[in-house]
Length: 353
Image (cartoon, one colour):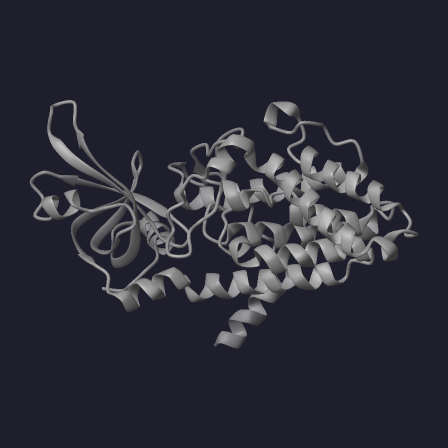
């Protein structure tokens, strides 16, 4: 059987059963009972970019084996996979086995395409930071990548809704920076240096709130993340880095304009205001053009990612119509195909002949 990722299996299963193997890590395993008091195991599996739930009934040959699985175990699941309208991706006529150390190493490195994309995104972030003209903001961003870069590269942008995968925060941050650099010429009054720095730091607190370990895909819980939340942690982290850099560069920064204290306050405002409203967790609403731009760029990328993921996971209600994916406001409708000129189609067909 072909070895596929959970996401690849989910896409192919939209058209029927898929025979495949998948390598994954046990995210959770628990013994449960049906309403008729029939025992079963429920196992949540995760790989580099997706999750599925495996329900193991007591009459399955691997029931005892599955009952002994622990959080963090690595397994291969092979069999028939299908997309159930109510329960999502499910497996039938399957078997499991433990992965070997080389197989675990391959799984942790991620599929080649995703690995290449995230490496490219991280490189783009570093290159964009290097273009920041304000030496204070540039030094702050570079110090963050130097100290926390490896943790940043394995952090998810969210637990469930968008970019909820190992390295998802890098993807989200890079795409936001691309949007910012594209719109900046259209709104020349925006301080692009400040906006780029704000994009890097707006979710930096998620390095504690949504961190993933070096050796797995199971997102744990961190007491700092639970008690403070990523916005408060981000404010604290930036202040800590700023104090250190200010002490080292006090004389060089003394006569810069705008004043260093103003730069610090405006950057902190971008972090604190990026959720937009107090009801969504921000202690303050956006009060500068850069803060408002950051808020909308963040929402744009997050919600378009939800659409893309929703088309592969949501229940199909009718042709081109999918069930609602929260927190999007209603049912999803497939995008209109891009226009293709008839002459272009004819030329392409002729070239293929």
